Image (cartoon, rainbow, N blue to C red; front, side):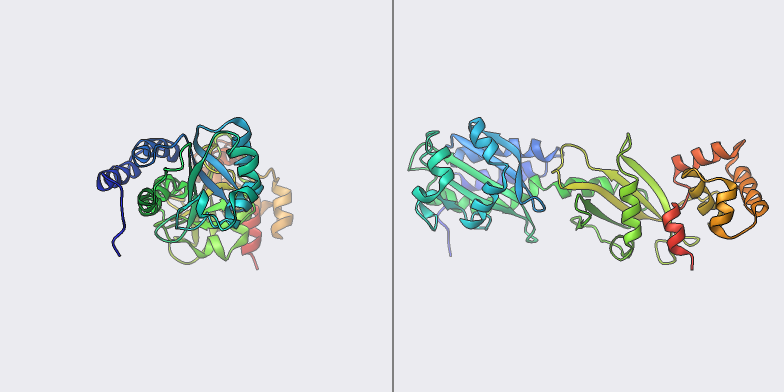
Length: 344
């Protein structure tokens, strides 16, 4: 079927596609896309919002032309429920007069949008080509002539590209690739769930080993919000029985339900430290003494002291405190929770 499209549709589509690949933040790409959209639909107000599925609401990424009351409403779960009930989260753009119920029965339209001078509009879900819901695009006009059916057809074609442009997981995937030797990564959400990153595999350590994610959560909240540590593991990408876990906390530019990127990589240079020594370093970092380590591991204190002397020599540091500091900085330790989980 050949779609009826507005004049210059190919030009606008090419421009939006180019903007979607800009080396910029999702918010910057969203702002850049508004100009070509305005050439298709002469809108008076627009919002590009990102979905927060855990809170069932949207975070405004780019928003212009709406008063404070409408902007506040757009971040509520009531707005989310209304969008969902009207079918606006789908791939087909809907104008106000296309809604399955009369506009006069929609509270937000009667109480907010129409009093603000809006006569028509269009909304569409921002869904990636892989079928992942990213957010919502909404435009409002002061004329019943806009948006035209042809313009809506073009918005339908552009929506997956806009979803790609503003996808926050795309930027987080770039962050994960910074980790040297990264073989898998995931995004940890505020509720403790995980989301796959586009173009990256996940890993059993991030799906079937809850202790790893729980330990990652315990390491969040620092300045900077970054940590790296080791976990016992005997499958690739492990070396010497360990894999490395690296955590980056998400910053304020990402949706609030995304908490951190967690990546898996080979352990790197372990400085000759044994598995037992890496676990003892983890206990030291937690503030344990030689005596408490001996009790926890069921071994004599002199044996622990011998391990601590070996650690000090291998790390080329003068004392145990400095050894713990260096191990924490370089991620040369197994956190106590993971060490306990790995022991029979």
